Amino acid sequence: MSELRRIVVIRRDNIGDLVCTTPLIAALRARYPQAWIGALVNSYNAPVLEGSRDLSAVYSYEKRKHQGTHGGIVGTLIERLRLIRSLRAQNLDCAVIATSSHVARTVTLAAMLRPRTIAGFVDGKRPDARIRLPVPQQSTAGLHEVEAVYRLAPLLGIDAPIPPLRIAPAGDAIATARSALERAGLAGRVLVGVHLSARRPSQHWPAERYAELIVQLQERFGVASVLFWSPGAEDQPQHPGDDRKSAEVVKRVAGRAPLLAYPTTELRALIGALSICNVVICPDGGAMHLAAALGKPVVALFGDSPIERWRPWGVPHRVLRPESRNLADLPLEPVLEAFRALG
Image 1 (cartoon, rainbow, N blue to C red):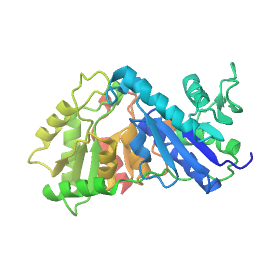
Image 2: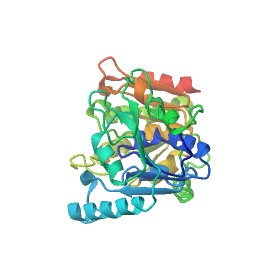
Image 3: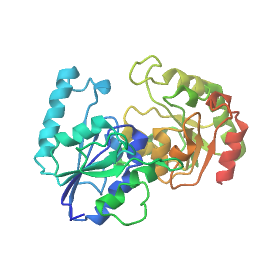
Image 4: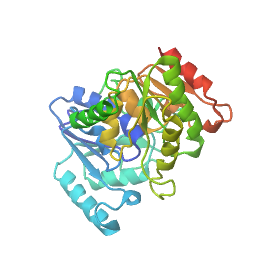
C-alpha cells in the first residue's frame, strides 16, 4: 500500500469493542507517524478515546437508540449529516472499517465519507463492491476480538506485533475519584474495584453475593472496595440501570467492610476511578475491557459469552464461568480463590 496521509477508523458499536480496536489505532500511528488519523465512533463509546495520543481527531455521532441529546430523530440526523460533511472535507485516503466481520450499515456509512479507499472485511457469499481493499471473511474461531480486528493490519501496510490496549484516563476524573476516597477514609488503602452491571441477563450475579464478596475481601485480605454500577432504574428501555441492586449491596455491607459506592454517570468518570484501583472484579463487559486497558489485573465473571473472544487482554486475569453459563449459578468461593491466585 502507498503511504496514507489521511485515515479515519470507524468503530460504531460497544465500549469493549472500541477498546479492543485501540491496538490497531496505535499500530496505524506507529506506521504513519505524520498522517492525520481520525476516529468515527458513537457518543456512547467516544470517551474511550479521550486523550488518545494516537489520534488527530475523534468524531462521534448519536445512534438512534441513544437519541435525546440533539432533539430526537430529526436533530440526530441533522447532526450526522454535519459530521459526514466535515469528514468529506478531510479528503480521506482511507476509511478503515475496524470490525471483525462485515457490517453492511457501516460500509454504507464509510462510503458516504467518499474516501479514496475503504478497507474492511467482506462476506464471502456477497462481496461488497464498495470495499476496495477487501479482507475475505474467514473464521475467527479461537481468536480474541483484538486479534480478529488486527487481521486488517497487513492490508494497511502494517507489519508489526499487536500493540497493547491503550486508553488515557482524564486527570480531573482521577482527581475526583481520589477526593471521594479521601472523604470515605480509604486513601492509601489497597483497592478492589467491583463493577456489578452487565447488559446480558446471563451475566447477572446476585446482590447478596456481591455484598458478601466485598465483606470477605476485607476479612480475608484486608482490602477495601469501590463499588461501581450503571446508574438508573432497571426498567429504563435503552440503558437499564442498577440503582436498586447497588443499594441492596451497600445496605448488606454497611458496618461490615470499608466500601466507597461510586456510581458513574459518565464513562470518563468510570475510567478515571478504575485507574486508581489495584484489582478489578466484574462481569464480562465494557468495564472489564477498560480495566484491562488500564493494566489492572482482572477477575472476570462470564455467563454465556465466548471466553476466548472476550477475555481480558494483555493483563493477569482469572476467568470464571459456571457450567450452566448463567452467572447466577456461580458461588462466591471460586471468586475469592481467583482473587487470591492473582496475588
